Structures are given as C-alpha cells and as structure tokens.
Length: 314
Ligand code: 3PG
Picture 1 (cartoon, rainbow, N blue to C red):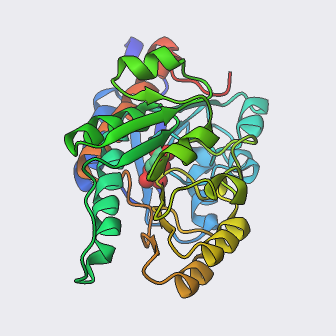
Picture 2: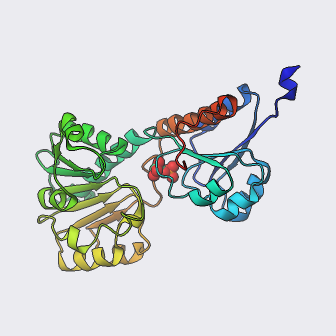
Picture 3: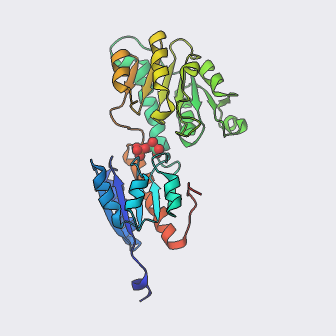
C-alpha cells in the first residue's frame, strides 16, 4: 500500500561513449530492483537527443557527456546527476546548484584502468611506436606523477612493478602521504619536470590548471623527456608545447585526449606524438562496471536516504 504512494524515479543513463553491456545491465538491475524506472540513451550523436531524453528524467548517469545549463534547463524533474568517473569539469556546477540539482562523481572507480593505460602508452612510446628500431626500457627511469589522487596512486603502484624510480608532486596532498606510499615527494611541479624522464599528468581541469603545462615547464624536461597526458586536454598550452617540440626534437607528447590542434601535432611530430582516437583511459569493462554500478547505487541511496556523500557542488 505504502509502496504505491512512493513515486518511481526515472533514472536515465546518457552516454555518448557507451559503457560495456555488462555495466548497462548491472545499472538496469539496480535501478529496477529499487523500484525505479531505467532509461538508456547511448551512442547519441546530436545534443537534441540528449535534450529530449532528459525532459522527464529524475536522475542522470553520465560519463564525459556535457551537462550544460541548456541541458539542465531542459530537465525539469532532474534532482541528481552522477558523473560515473572522476572528473566533473563537463558539468556546469553553478547552473546545477542554482536549480537545486545535486552533482556527484564516483571517485576511484575507474582509476586502475587509467593507470594501466599509462603504461600501455609508455611502453609503446619508449619502443618508438613499435617501428622496429631499438628503443628503451622503463626500468630505472624516473617517473614524475603530477597530482597524487586516485589515478596518480595507481600509477605509482604499477610503476614500482616496472622498477621505475617514482616521484610525485601534488599541491593539495601532504608530502608525508606521498612518501608513505613509497614515492619521492618534490617541492613543486618545476622540480618534477626537472628531475624526471617521464611526467604523467593527473591534474583535473580547473581554473588554476588550465594551460598550466606550458613552454616554461616542459622546457625543464631532460633530453628525451616524455609528457604523458591521461587527464584533460585543457591543462596543456597547445601553442607553447608545439613551439617547444619544434625547438626540442628530443621530446615526446603522448596523450589519451586529442588536443584541439591534433592535426598540427600529428603532422609536425611524427614519431614523437601519439593521441588515442577516443579517450580510452576508463574504457574497460571493469571500470565501466565499477563506476556505472557505483553511480546507480549512489542515486538509489540518495532517493532512499538522502545520502549526499559524493556531492561535488556543495
Ligand atoms: C574520468 O574523469 O573519470 C575519466 O576521464 C574517464 O572519462 P570517460 O568516462 O569519459 O571515459
């Protein structure tokens, strides 16, 4: 009797880059078992499809999908958006807050997948993109981890398996925490670039970090230095990196997020530049299941108990 009085919530999964089928099935199961309604919009190609789909949604699960003011305005019933993943720079937090919409992420759920990709790309890079010529090994090389969050910590763990010498800098993480993880903490990002053979970026895209990986910083890299980016394209100052790579023909840039000037990088730096065709870091069945199911559980719990533990727009 009571149950009939409880409103069923419509929980929409809207993913331009779809989850693995097992993750979608798992989300559907959680939603339906909780007595709510499951809806799916994946592989969409047009913003209009998203605007139509959100019209009657109470909750939204997304990946890197852009939740702009326009999307929020089209979603009159919306109460919660969960970004199944770490970075939430794709959600207009101000607009969500203004509309009373709770925004959450699922921290840590896809970080192992991203960390593993770092090493997949690094082996490819130090072996000259498998062109048959003699390359080098990761063992004994100095790896600098910029930002020691969930992904950075997983990168450090895997790097030790490769017998790398691991360094890190994080503006918000105390040195002691970095050192407790068996990683050498340096004082600032300049020191990280100066010290290391390879620098792996794990900073979010914020007002402070956007364009921060620039000429001055990257020019501190040693001969043969590599910058690997599995974070966000916005943290790179693309014009300055192009200028530096023109001057320093020893440097490589490897990225999981194609820059706006992808074609220019590719044309100018053959053999020294590689970008995955689509962001692949979190694109594993395991990461999709971890992040997708966590998102569904967070939404169900939010509707049931009001739990806002992972809210990011407080
Ligand atoms: C994240 O912030 O969680 C990663 O960049 C993964 O993004 P994706 O879900 O779009 O693959």
